[in-house]
Image 1 (cartoon, rainbow, N blue to C red):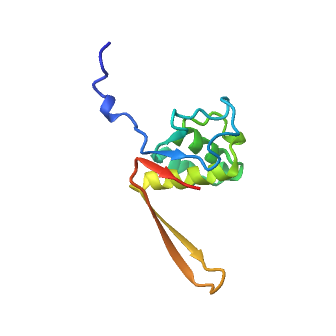
Image 2 (cartoon, one colour; image 1 turned 30 degrees about the vertical axis):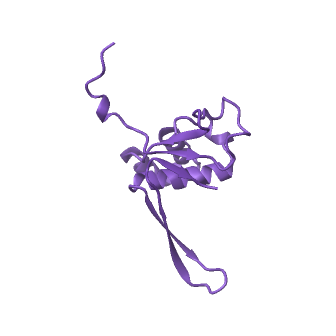
Image 3 (tube, rainbow, N blue to C red; image 1 turned 60 degrees about the vertical axis):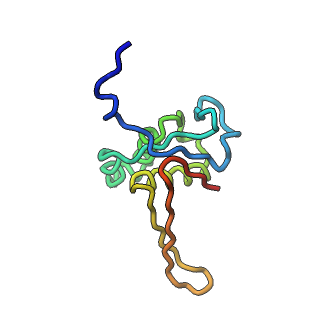
Length: 129
C-alpha cells in the first residue's frame, strides 16, 4: 500500500498525557488509552480557538466538549470524563498549543501576593498528578 505524500503534514499529537486517575475508572466507551495508559494530546486548532471565544458555545459547555473531542480523540465521551482528568487535559492542551510552555498567575493564600508559576514540558510526555 502506498504512503500518502501529504502524511507529514497531517495533524500530529504534541504530547502524551498520563491521567491523574490512571484511567482505571473508565470503560472503553469513555476513553481508549494507549498501551502505556496515556492519551494523545493535540494542540488547539484555529477553529478550537474560535469556539473557546464564542460566548453561546461556552455557556452550554458545547465548546469545551468539542475541544476535548478534537484535541484528545481518544476520549470517546467527554461528559463522563472525571474532573481531575479534565483539568490535567486542559493544562496539557494549553501547553501543547504554546510549545510546551504555560504560565499560571495565582494569589498566595498567606500573603495575598500575585505569583506566576511556569509549566514547561518537552512536548513528548507530560505527567500531572
